[in-house]
Length: 160
Image (cartoon, rainbow, N blue to C red; front, side, top):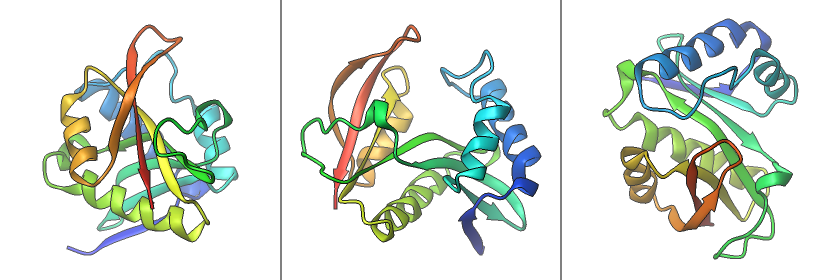
């Protein structure tokens, strides 16, 4: 298969929003109650910080990649130019096929092109399959964090 990795554009909005809704409805996630919101997705697209992976012109994965001041604390590997990954998801129809790891690899390469010295993000402590995948592609669990949204998360980082 030939996958296409690119920045999302406004014509992708409906499909991106539908993918997030599908993931919320059909998989484990702490998302919901308006997150990610339509406004946030449109903002990510306008700021050119939302990336998609397509298979046969269908979006199968999506993620934010950019600065996020609230999460830009270096935990353990002391990143000086970190890039944040957020709102990453893979279509339920493509999970457990290696797409998540492949997509993270593409996001890592994009972060390097942006001048980052590493990446970081948060993963809900109740999502062991995601943690396993992130660790498989080189990310390190750097400890527990506490969310304002009622769940705990681990801080994951990788230094390039």
